[in-house]
Length: 242
Figure (tube, rainbow, N blue to C red):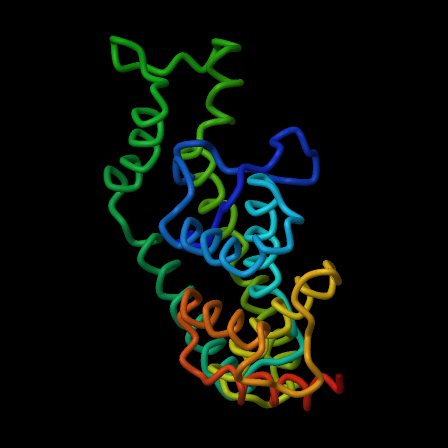
């Protein structure tokens, strides 16, 4: 996970989500998220539209949109260089796992039991115990180990799928990686403002003295985007046709 993940806790009862265990998540908002919420307050407080919880959700959706906007844009060259590396490294990982000595391979299983607290004082795991069988399936280390076993047992089928991914990768609309990230952030900021029309107005042309420009400047800084907001806005507008 990155510093931007898990801005807000998500309802674990939602059936469509495979939630990570609490120990796999940060215990609270990261420094990035705290700063993002502070900057959103800076630009939107004067409109008196949002309370504390609203700002948390604004940050959540802005962060999500920045990561997922403009999915049709990517650098085909970069992706087509990455996919062969993925194929090579997965094959190498499978070969390494296959040649591990048996005691070393067994250490994965024993470690998963230990870390899950599933071995009793005699250091034996009672597989006849119903509680044990239920518990072991819910521990993250055991699930990770079993996922690795199942994945590498079927690795050749996944390797075949990389060919399909390479075909799709060639269809990306060409753009530099920095430009794409900047356009995504512009698009996310535009979407945020347009969903709340009584707040910051999105201009047809960038005005460097306007509120949307100042908002973009702060967002570019907190997201670590180095491209100029003016050029990013122009590029986004040109390629998105808006």
